[in-house]
Image (tube, rainbow, N blue to C red; front, side, top):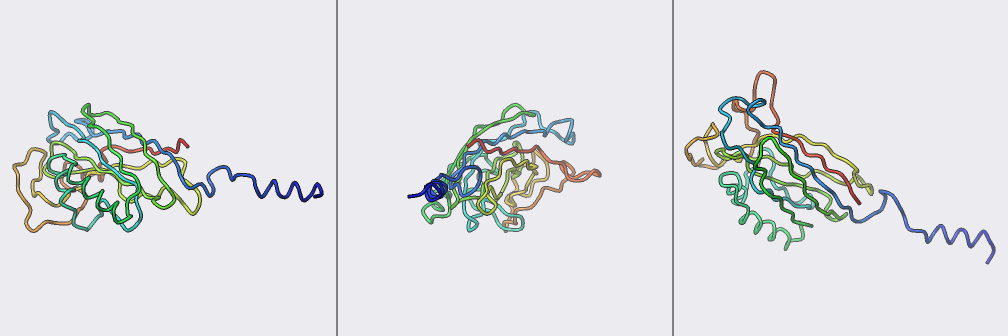
Length: 216
């Protein structure tokens, strides 16, 4: 074997480095809540919180929530009660159908404004990420992200910064944070909250943002 052939074989056998052709990636998400009496003064509640968070990595055949589409029973329970047990069962069922990669959870954010950090892993087969949490108290308002791509071709994203908007789950007709229970029949589709609490003359007010950074 001559020297040229030896060097050529070394190049062929060398592991691929960097963001290309890597099948897995580890991420850290930092959720920053800016929702406050200063940013959202109308009727701002005395004990604001973001409920227990639940999320997943997944394929494009699955959507955690989507503008204009009806949410699941598990999403309704999160939106109205902040409870994730039924939603997790729905995720596990989607996992059985090979739509879900990893399920992850995060604790409540009880100090508002405030932040929370959580970690999750993604694979090339499940390159989208979603999560949801209840804006509490509220009739059925949630925030989160849905079907955000972490991968473009064979390259993983290094950093994403995304706004967090208030969404109406379409299951309760209340229009203020402390409205009495008003079950919406028939159930409406998920849509952005456009009450004066979040839509002002300056436009739609976000409740925070999330920074997703690749750590490995």
